[in-house]
Amino acid sequence: MQTFLQSYKAQAVTFLFIWLVSMVLSAEFVLSVSMIALICLALFQLKIEGPSVRLTLRETLKQNFNNYWQYRAWLAVSIPFLLVLVSWPWSGDLHYTLERLRIKLPFIALPFVFASMPPLRKREVYTILYFLLVVMSIISAYVLVNFIANFDAEMAKIGRGGHLTTPSNHIRFSLTLAITILGGGALWFDNFSLKTNPQQGDAQTRRASNPLIAGLTLFLFAFIHILSVRSGLVTLYVALLALGAWFVFVKKRYLLGLVGIAGVALLPVLAYLSLPSFKAKVDYARWDYLQFKQGTGADYPDSERFTSMLLGLDIGREHPLLGIGAGDLKREMQQRYDAKAAGDYQFRMPHNQFVTIFAGTGAVGLALFLVGFFFPLFYRKNWRNPLFLALHGVIFTSFFVEDTIENNFGVSLYLFFLLVGVKYLAGEEQESL
Image 1 (cartoon, helix red, strand yellow):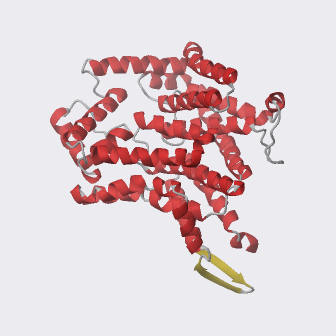
Image 2 (tube, helix red, strand yellow):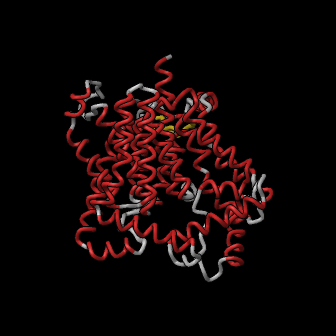
Image 3 (cartoon, rainbow, N blue to C red):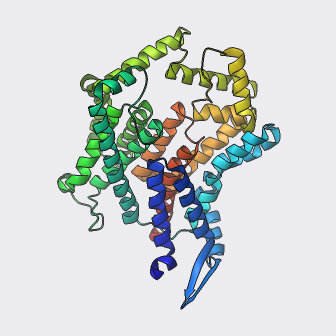
C-alpha cells in the first residue's frame, strides 16, 4: 500500500482506468472525481517517512511545467477552452458562458496533467485498450441480449427513428465502440498478450495469435452494425478508410490497403442486406430526410438535426468574423427557433461541432479550432502512428453530425484517447533521442 501511495504512475494509471469505466457507464460524478484526482496528483504528492505522512507540492512541478511548454501539442489541445474565454467580452449571457467554460475546463487542465505523468509505454497503452475491449464486449453482450429478448419492440422503436437501449447516451456509446474496435484491431495486429510484451511476427503468426482479442473485436464489429447508430458507423468506416490510405501511402502495402478500402466499401451493403436493424435505420434515415426536404419533418430526429444546423449557419453568416459569442449562442438559437420554427421543431443546439464553433466564434474561431485539432496529429509527424490517425478520423467525422465536445461525456471521450496518445508519442520520441 505504501508503495502504491508513493508511486505516481501507479496512482495515475488507476485513475485512468476509473475514468474509462465511469465514462463508458456514464457515471458523471465518478468521472469528475477521477479527473479532479488526476489534477491533484499532478500538483501534490504524499511524503511518507516512517510514521510521518505529509502532503506537499510535487517535487517535479517545475520540470513538469517545462515539459508542458516544450512539447507544443499540449498547448494546442487547450484551444477549445480559450475560444470560449476570449469570446467572453461579446457574450452577454454570463450564466451560459460560465457553463461553457466549466465544460471546456478539462481542455486546459488535463494537458498539463498528462504532461506531468511518467511516460506511458506501449504495453501500458495496450493494456488500457485491452481493458476497454473486454468492458465494451460485456456491455454490448448485455445490450444484444436485451435486443433479442425484446426484438419486436426494439425493431419498432428503430423503425420510428429510435435506438437500442444502451447504458449511456447511444451516440457517445457508438463512438466509444468505434474506437474500441480500432484498438482491438491494433491489439490483434501487434499480437498483444497480457502475459508478454507486444511482439512483432509475420502475418500468419499474427492471424493465429490471441483468439480472444480477435473474437471480441469481430463481435463488436458485428454489434456496431446491429446497434446501427449512424454516428458510430460512419466514424468507424472513415477511420478504416484512413487506415487503408495509410497502408497504401505510408507503408507502401498497396494490395493490403486497396483490399481493405474495397472491403470497407462493400461491408455496409452486406450489412443492409443481412441485418434487419441496420436496414430499418437506413430506410428510416432516407424517409426522414425526404420529410425534411418537404418541410414536414416536425418531431423527426434527423429533420430536427438539419434544422438546428441551418439555424446555426444563419447565425454564423450574420456574424462571420468573430461569431455571436460562445456564451450567447444558446439564447440566439432559442430566438431563431421562436421566430422561424415555433411549433414545428423542438429546440436543439446546432448538431454539428463546426457550426457550433462558427456561430459562436466566427471564421477566426473555426480556423483556430481546426489548428488546435490537427496540430497534435501533425506535430513531429505523429500521423505516422496509425491508431492515432484513426482516432482523429473518428472524432473529426463525428463533428459533422454531433456537437461532440459540448457536453461532459464528449469532452472526456475525446480527451482521454487524445491525451493518452499524445503522452505515449511524446515518450516514444524521448526514447528515440
